[in-house]
Amino acid sequence: MFCNDFVFFRQNIAFLIKELMRTFAPRPLIFYFMQIQLVDNKYAQVTVLDDAATIVCILKTDYVPAKDFQETFAQIGEYVKQHPIRKMILDKRNLKVFHQASMVWYHVEWKQEMKKYGLTAYRKLLPDDVFFRKAVEIARKNILKEHPEFRFEDFDIHYCETMEEALQH
Image 1: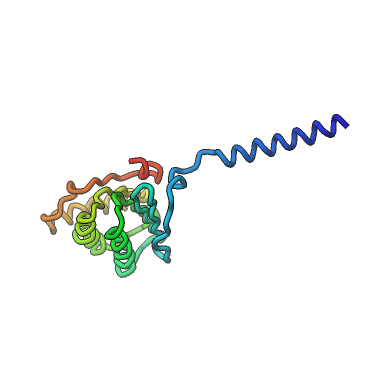
Image 2: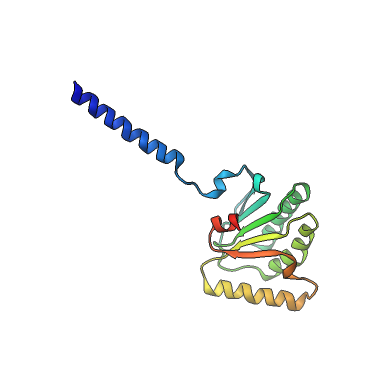
């Protein structure tokens, strides 16, 4: 009898320890915020982390057509105009290419408009692709050349390697 009770006790303790570890295991920082799903379509998933005054936009495909990109950001813009959002995390890690005219619109028009509502901090996650990163660098130079009125330094922009880093920075 004692042996059976001991085995039963040992199994239950092992189960309890596993449950406690699963329950209290460190979670990604994103799980600690109240989340509101703003957009979820073929090309993008946009989540508001209300407690952090942050919007996270994850681009889901290797390319986002200009019309869909602008529609998604128009929805984000409408939300920003009505809520105190200070930071946006743009996760481009799934992209292989980007539409240059969309990027110009995003920087020169959309960001300028959002600045009026307090959104000035941007965290960007880029694909681990040297050519993509070089294309971003070239695109930024072209924006400055073609739109000298736009100033990147008016914004708090940081490139991050992980979502955790983007959330904390």
